[in-house]
Length: 142
Image 1 (tube, rainbow, N blue to C red):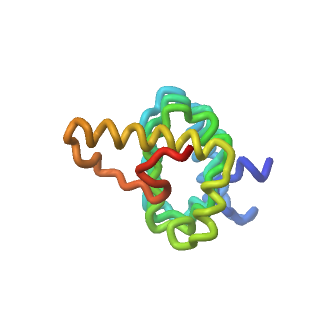
Image 2: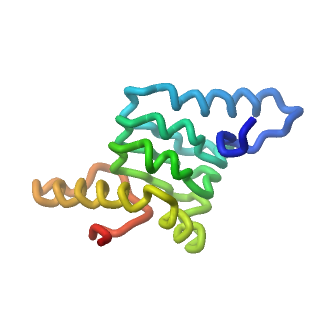
């Protein structure tokens, strides 16, 4: 097992945790997925790098999980990602973790897509999609 692909902290003796770990990783094979909501799953501590294969993914919600970072593969591979919700995660509670996430390769491209998406919503007088971005600003970084 590659540490980058581990998505939950599991005891080697706990078969149920191993099953959860394997099942989350294989969500990366859902090539046509546009929205992935994994809120309220305390067993999720890591986002699998395999999620980077979800090029059509527009929304990733990981609220109320133990996620502490998102791998570069997700920001680089999820070229349609515009909404990332990380409420009640380690990232949301720790400014150092949020700063580290902003430094991950591919985050700037994600943030630009997110800002353009928000600009379009405001221009069309659409005031929200029900998703809150925890990170980033409404301005595109230059």
